Image (tube, rainbow, N blue to C red; front, side, top):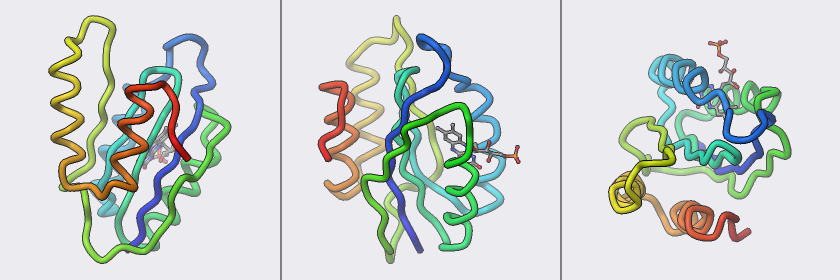
Length: 133
Ligand SMILES: Cc1cc2nc3c(=O)[nH]c(=O)nc-3n(C[C@H](O)[C@H](O)[C@H](O)COP(=O)(O)O)c2cc1C
């Protein structure tokens, strides 16, 4: 299997990223393609890890790379894996009035089985607004 972690910037102004549309397409496609992982967004940036069979990841990532809803896509991590680190596919988005504790707890739960090379960039981005390379 293959696992990719990347960061990108939303092309929609402000916090108007099309999260609902992305979520719907991803849930549908990833269930069929055997893709698991986590998509995080604050409405301006995306950070996503996808993992699964090599062919599924190549095809999915090729579509993601040409998607005009984001730009400045930078791959932080691309490696072969033996075992999945995510049980399913999920999306985390902190809305303006979501309590910080509940959001932190959710992210810790979602990242509980991920290796530090995956979880650290997520926590860096959540805490500092940027990912450590
Ligand atoms: C930040 C971001 C993350 C995305 N993640 C996924 C994903 O995990 N799986 C997926 O199939 N499409 C994902 N997409 C959407 C794809 O770029 C593409 O629009 C979609 O796969 C096309 O699916 P369709 O042909 O079924 O409409 C993502 C798009 C963006 C902008």
